[in-house]
Length: 385
Image (cartoon, rainbow, N blue to C red; front, side, top):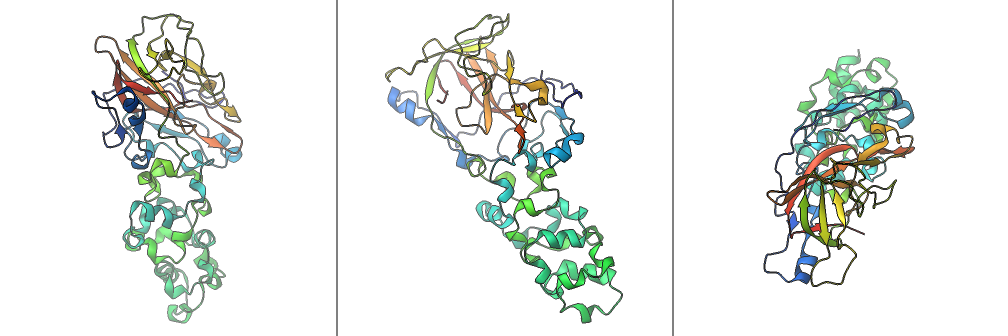
């Protein structure tokens, strides 16, 4: 069980049993039973171009982050709570992704990739708009202040509510000129039904970078139309085909003092010994028929058995500075963690753990687990470099 907290504020998280889950076969390329060793090595990979936040399995544990008091330093409020079964797109905030390309993504670019027509996406699909007044909204959208009022239906309708003059005489004025009317400029967009307008009704909105939107860091991934359906390899720098090892034997929690490990984290390295009484792990060997890679006899320790030091900078204290032991075969975007072993069936489960990053540091990998795939003895496993 992992605690989620900022310094001095503790939240206890209840553990749940990891349910059986396997990434859909279309996303994983596993070797056929009769394939040669070389074919097995090159064929086992993950197609990240077909995996999105929305296709990932929900987390299997609940959690809470308390950190409103750090919002000024981080640029957004990192606080949130979630329950077991929550989709990861409802847990990850845009501010968590500040070290990726996400803040610079434009709404239209996202919609184009996922095949959405801006004219079919209603304005209420952007929940933050309800919290903005006209002035804030106009400042966020490039070029909108120079657009005639009559070309922006939602603002035209808001002006009818606020301006005590003939609206027809104002229709040809630019939106920027009308911001001199305080009653109009300070009017909340929530005063009209935003479901009656589309993204295409706002000139320039689809060309607006997400970071232009007020309080963008507080938005969850699911609150940006199309973002949860964007391929993960367009959000993170991910390796899809990586070095492998073979799982020789699956061991449970009764094992102790496993010292020949290949697991750990960026802060402590990836051969952190499990010097304790309970060390569930996988015994690995080199892939038969291929040149040795040093995996023979190595041990991949369960993240439920062992925690290691994680995090850096201003976020090093999050989760007590701890994260489950594991590896990063696909890169630094998330951590691959062994989360369950079952000796009788010779099977094991792997999950992803996410972190959040800001300009001043990175948290430990503690947001999860997000079940990714299951394996059995004699299967290959991603180990990375």
